[in-house]
Amino acid sequence: MKIFSSIPDLPSENKTIITIGTFDGVHLGHSVIIKRLNTLAQKTKLQSVLLTFFPHPRHVLQIDDQDMRLINTLDEKKMLLENSGLDNLVVHEFTKEFSRIQSANFVRDYLVGKLNLHTLVIGYDHHFGRNREGSIKELTALSELYGFNIEMISPQLFENVAVSSTKIRNLLEDGDIEKSNRYLGYEFFLFGKVVRGNAIGKKIGFPTANIEIQNKFKLHPANGVYAVKVILEERVFKGMMNIGTKPTLEGGKKTIEVHMIDFSEDIYGKELQIKFIKKIREEKKFKNLDALKQQLLVDKNKIEHLIDRC
Image (tube, rainbow, N blue to C red; front, side, top):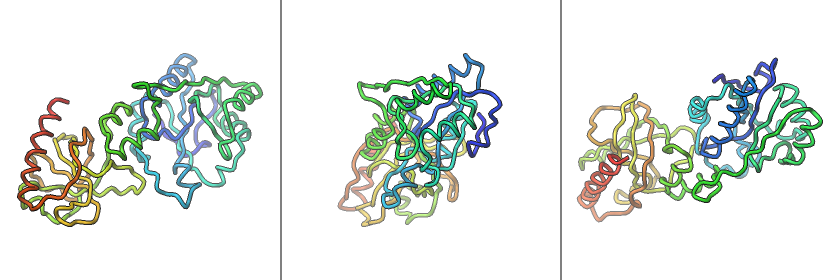
């Protein structure tokens, strides 16, 4: 897969099969669109192109509302798409000026004029252009005018639910890891750097790696204790993660910490990938550290058995 940082960067001597969207999560619904895109490209012997935007349009257009967190960072999205069979990924910068382009001009000047569009593969609810004014009806009219094809993908139902990035974000923010993973088609993950904490966990036999997530828009699940897999330099470890304020220690500040089971190396400053398996309980305040330790022993046993069955 070749990656381009703007629409004009993609060589357009040949016709292309294109899909457009933010593709946050690269979930099961997205996979259907991408699979159809690749199938058409192979059938027509043309290049498949996924056009996405960065930053996320809401982060650009809604300056007073920056609360929305994303399932994937841009680097994570690229990593997921790398194995999708795509020929080309175009990540075009989304700006206020770009958002003001009228839908008809976007199709004429960018999709047809610069990307040499042959067929557009889109989801059933796709809108585009200034104020999302472009609709399927308008696209149909423009396709007749400029001579390209449209293939619309119907909503993808999973467990009788139309899978969407919004639904998955809500599930993750509620701590429903199992359902979100089913809708994603993979285990939700995050990357973080190990930084120094207060070392209380080490004193009770459960040393933790404090995780710093550098991307402020990266979503992380609801507060609680989770069964996770921890990937360190291609090695995989069982882990239990706590997201929250550590009420037993009167922490106050929200932290993300992971205890790697049967692990004792010094990993300060290293990057970990955390894959979430299941939320096993809510975060709670214990009367003392001994009570906390006893609960952690129960958590550890539950997590080991859970991950062994995965």
